Image 1 (cartoon, rainbow, N blue to C red):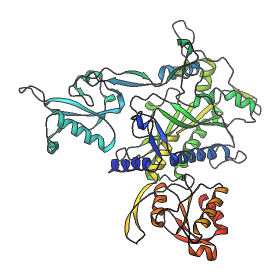
Image 2: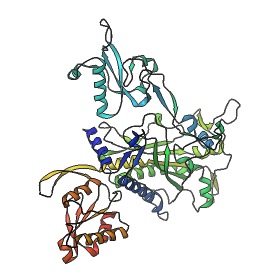
Image 3: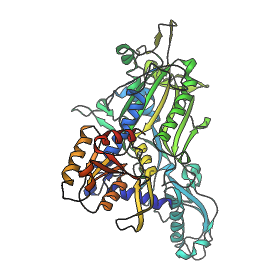
Image 4: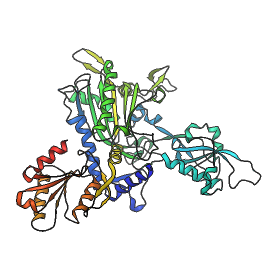
Length: 551
């Protein structure tokens, strides 16, 4: 089952040092995660692949296939804490909210759309003997198959029924989000973990930004916020980049960095966290070319995941419907992945590609924008002045070729580094049958990482710990390290067990030094996925592995 697969992935992630619960020895802290020795390498490889493909190895002299024209790509690194006016003008201060509800009985707090339930007809176990059955909305928090199981357990307990009576439950609907119910029906809702109906408060806004204080006085004037996204750092530096670099529109500014959102109910391992890393790019282009560029970046970002090993069967590119679009968005598409914690046919967002028009630059020039009569206008307060004033700086762009001045449109591919890492980890997890040291077939757990992402690229083993094999293996190991190839050296346990250890952490190649190595200077190189073993000259070994890593 899907949830068992996810449980296995989470267990492997801890056992092999990919991901740990933050502050685990103190009971952990919800929504925060630590990356272990292998996890930090995997995540760094995801970052490096994104940065190389988007920035450093992008060749502005040649037009990529399908691009409307050639373009430059540059990077920045902006601060986590920015001027508070940034977040007021961008709309985050007022609009960056989720709806939450509280349970008066259990004193628990939930994000409204994370609570799921089903209508069911029945009689509560503690109801009066002459009470009639009633229709109730029984709730739980979860996704996928486990949600149905949890709702069934909840209903059986509430109605005082035994586990073998599940087929007698009189369900009246399929699972639906609590957010789909009108508030008037909350009187019939039984909250997660509650025993009584009607214990939920009305939904109210909860701002997701983390508030902090600058300086020693601690007054309201000293309030600041941890950034909820990296994008605004690129918008406020648009003019700086134009003035300091030889970039001309169209061009992109990329950034990788930490963001923070005070999620009400973080869940699903690292998928929804309070501290996370983003890989974002703002692509500035002429308004007349923006739709072409939107299509280009949407398709290019979808293919990036496929090129790094995600199967097309588990990945979709979903265009947002009009009622889903942000008020500033001309178009948005999400790259979504079939995470194992979701029900079959459901997908979770990996990356959003948004056509933002000129909303952001204009906001930082003029003030916070809102939509009125279908047009974006500066939002005003009761005095008729801008509610949140912009910088007043001219952020327009002058094209010295066409002699035209305009506010560029922006295409924004915004990816979650942690979510991408989780998706690559889930996609890589496989189980198959392989022979052990004695030839018997056993279940083998392996991570089929793309070679660019694998934390360790090659493992070097002496077959036995004598006859000069450890010394020769150590020498080969150092050659890999000098060549910049992430390698490990292991001489403990039987060779088959060492192979299994490397398979389980996703190492593509294992090199074994044996008796023949000392006589003919060749080694055995084993492929993780195919189990094929070939002999390679020690002199050609590093080049051979480098070629295979490049694919």
